[in-house]
Amino acid sequence: MIFFGHLGLTAGAFKLYEAAAAKYAKKPVPEIDYRFVLVGSVLPDLIDKPIGALLFINTYHNSRIYAHTLLFTLILLIIGVCRFKKRKRSSILVLGTASLAHLLLDSMWRYPETLLWPFWNIRSALSAKAAWLSTLLGFPYRFDNWLEQNMLSILKNPTPLLFELAGIAILAVLFIRLIRKKQIPQFFKSGKL
Image 1 (tube, rainbow, N blue to C red):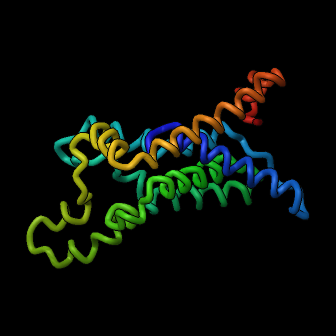
Image 2 (image 1 turned 30 degrees about the vertical axis):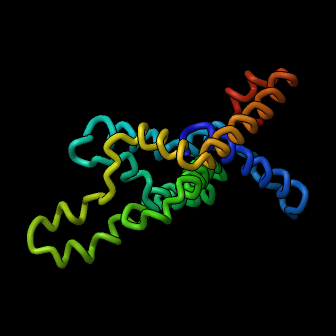
């Protein structure tokens, strides 16, 4: 998935959750700040693409590294749960949940060496006689030109393009609703959709 698919599908999933919770929850559910939903839905790419595909391309050859791991998302979720229990603020929990949605939309289960990093690499690092540290810290997949590879994969399989178009449609519906209700300034202040 590229960009709008992550934004739109994640925001749409949160809106569905919000509607179901309002209808079926026995207790009031905290309001969702959609600014954190939108940032969290692309956070792994915002972190990993500059590091792995631009700054350290010769080191990683990969644009799915640290922020595309379950460890990164679990850290965000643990911090979010602790903050929610202590201060009743859900922003970091929402950020972590949206980042988890990013991993699901990227089908990261197909890349267990990255998803389960560094735990997946521990066995290999212990059995490697030389360069054990680089084995432990490394990411095995090579995406030398991730943008070109994404474009070529869309030509072979148009499904990601359909997700991208669905994301754009969901975002359009949400923001047209904000424009009609004249709530864009309120969205930027509070994150309400």
